[in-house]
Amino acid sequence: MSQKKRLSLLGLDGAAILKEAKNLLAKRVEQPSRRAFLRNSLTLGGVAMLSGCSLSDDDNVEKALSSVSRFNDRVQGWLFDPNKLAPTYPESMITRPFPFNAYYGIDEVRHVDEASYRLEVTGMVADKRQWRLEELRAMAQVDQVTRHICVEGWSAIGKWGGVPFSTFLKRVGADLNAKYVGFKCADDYYTSIDMPTALHPQTILALTYDGKTLPPEYGFPMKLRMPTKLGYKNPKHIQAIFVTNTYPGGYWEDQGYNWFGGS
Ligand SMILES: Nc1nc2c(c(=O)[nH]1)N[C@H]1C(S)=C(S)[C@@H](COP(=O)(O)O)O[C@H]1N2
Ligand SMILES: [Mo]
Image (cartoon, rainbow, N blue to C red; front, side, top):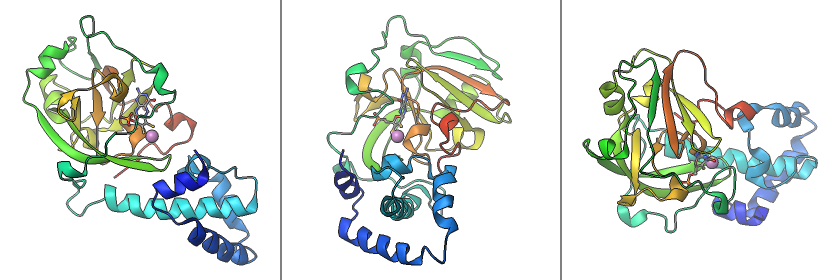
């Protein structure tokens, strides 16, 4: 995708960014450490992807800095709320079609077979038995319309339904004082979250998208949906869930993305 396209997806104005970049360039003499900061800072992981430019050129560095900081400002507003609840939206605001994203292209989407699928639950839980999808569908379901935000520089509103994750964790007798909940996926993806986020009222083990069984591209048979976290923290195609005190990391997190990734 071109840089212009990415910026326009962010609702950013290229000309305005250029102007800001020039101002920043003018200030460079007074702030020699700024570029080094941008290059080295892990909290700006994904900066090159977001801006679509290589960080080898002064102009691009400042453009990237500017677009990232504006995107971050907007993201803060979407993720952080005084009530600690992420915003919800009317169904009329659902983004159609909803974007697909993974570390591979859509032609390589994993197709998990429902008949043989079993969700594994291990670690610090009392009940380590495996779950069939039907058993999860039999539990009380909720749904919510929330915004998904990807660090690559796009966001979209979608509707996910499923079991509140806190209900599930209590049902399997998880140690709610444990530090982490980790996820292994049917592709090579993996991630992990802190226990307070796992127990957050808007964190759901999603079985549906837009009122229908979660399609393969959005993570069949299930994904963890957390509107308080960035896209990469929301694992699709969950195969195993484990509760642990040992830091499990994550696919992108181990490559420098911020582990907390949200509010
Ligand atoms: N199993 C798995 N889960 C994943 C990913 C992935 O590559 N594999 N990508 C993550 C990222 S970076 C994003 S933005 C979202 C995309 O979800 P979507 O395809 O429903 O938009 O999935 C997240 N969960
Ligand atoms: Mo993402």
